[in-house]
Length: 121
Image (tube, rainbow, N blue to C red):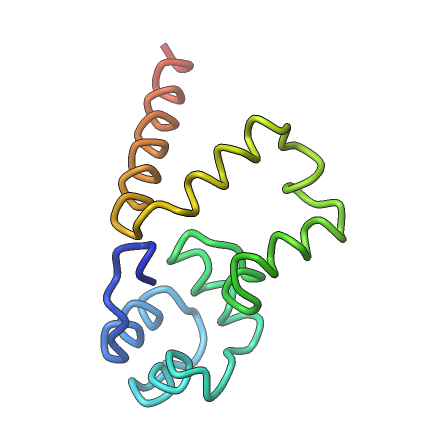
């Protein structure tokens, strides 16, 4: 949540989650248990949280390093499409502060959206 620039508030998490989830709403108490690590959301809820925070469900469940290792073992995005230059860039990105990582994500998102508009012209 810090890397997404979102303060870890149970009330905020419950509110944002409930706006995105199609099933039964959660309470701030349930969100608090997630934040404390006392419980883990079910997979459908984990996917909603991951979409909101713009991370993979694996990263939420296992952490950044474990998600990369999981990807490595599964032959996923991390190993199959990233060359050494991109891996080095990701290592540098990961040592940035949470605020700086959010700025980088915002810039990349803006460039991506601009490229889609440019492609339509």
